[in-house]
Image (cartoon, rainbow, N blue to C red; front, side, top):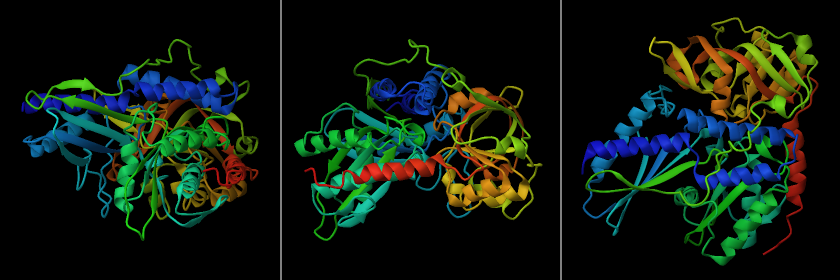
Length: 512
């Protein structure tokens, strides 16, 4: 095999997967946009998502800053050297990371050190299968941490909140799948897609669930019972009112694909792989002699560009009142905000994720954070020809991971606003009330949209934690987000959780 051609083919596969959503996913997002009520926060979010898709394709830059853990499924003819393919995949991963098509996401589980090139023990994930066809097929999925953390596995029989007992039958499976959508709320960047694996053991069940995510959004399950269940789950989940980003609305789930395998008598698992709207998976067929791409998958049907409708580029287009803020922000300004307000921030903000929050609990901050804004974000960064840092992708990360720290850190350093996605819990909400702070929900996955709001990188601290976890000093202009937790004890996330649980409970009765 020509290894140079193979490396180039793999580089192209990784780049396409990271920067250009497949046609079937685009059509699903268009359908959600058409079903949403105009002028709502959910409609605003879908407009931003559509613009982000356009920008990522035009810029050939990551759709979402969390380019996830690359997982390859490789089918090879008899006689093909799989070791050569492994080496070529690693070379392509290294090169695409260096070119900012992927964020360096490989972290040593014991030391916390970032390898810087997405390579490490067990990474990237490569699963080989031999077949009798005369060509190679390589599938790739980039599944970010926000949605990966909302994966869930059920062991039947079990008791489910809102739904009661789920038994070892098709109705019990139905209840588990509905509950999996409810528990994800907006933290997995809804509206999402789910792959479901029925049976197997704990590990093979999850593998089967993730395998379902390689199916076409619009296909029909060959098993009639599962086809009926897939259709039912999507229709029912969209009555929960969770909506895009968890803001409420009509679009909560865009697709459900279910696979089944045998199990042992003692175990009955239902495994669910949740995927965000930024559904980044692609596959290619490769000539085993030349290493060149023969065919791209997911090319059937119309490609929705989103350009023909001149999608609104900012929240100002769908919202009458936008609160302009410039950091540092006063407590008086924060106390005047309430859930539902749209804010536009200009000035300085600082990124801070898991490593930063853990560090700040026992150390001084490297900068004065009084009155400032912390952005839960691990950006994709690159250096320009002059050696200056530039932001290639910068959407929000899931905030709930910082719940043990956030309230204490806000009080300790005088932070007034936190930006992230998916909301936070009661400890943070209490601190917002006591301290005079606010939580702002940005649009998850909209990494190009928010990168465009960042006009410069003014510095960086704590680079020893790696690029995603460092504290970046960002100069932003008209960075828009929605107030979803205010200083008066109100939380949109808690309200949506409560109302969606009530709607979930309406489907406790057997339907199969």
